[in-house]
Image (cartoon, rainbow, N blue to C red; front, side, top):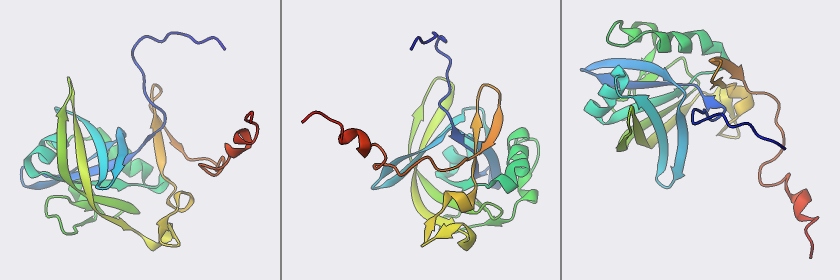
Length: 191
């Protein structure tokens, strides 16, 4: 199948929408982000890319701690708001039910069904962004999003961002079981 050269600008689809929390200049600060990914299991690491001018990036560098909060589609308007307003312009924390775990500088969003509490493991300075690698110290989840004590994506109902187009999307139906549905092709391999 023919492919079209799109140059060098790209986005990987989809990108989960999260709200990042930290203490900036001694105050709770939150922002919406979508460039986030799991990196490792032992230790449990998460990667987060934030623009170097972001107030939240400043706070992560100051405190060495942050939270990653996963909103459901029910919090999409709230999450978008947290991305529209800069923390140095407005105190977004007045709209947030803040709770804390063991880390004092990683405020978490009570409205989000799933939250991660992280310490800064490493910072990679890129041309225009910081890539923060956080070590997950604790995961908090509401019972309503759990099945057999595991986070159930159908109950959580997370949403993702696609670019270009800047559109939020809900997850659809399951496609199949990972590390399983491809076995049909294994059976067809020449012996």
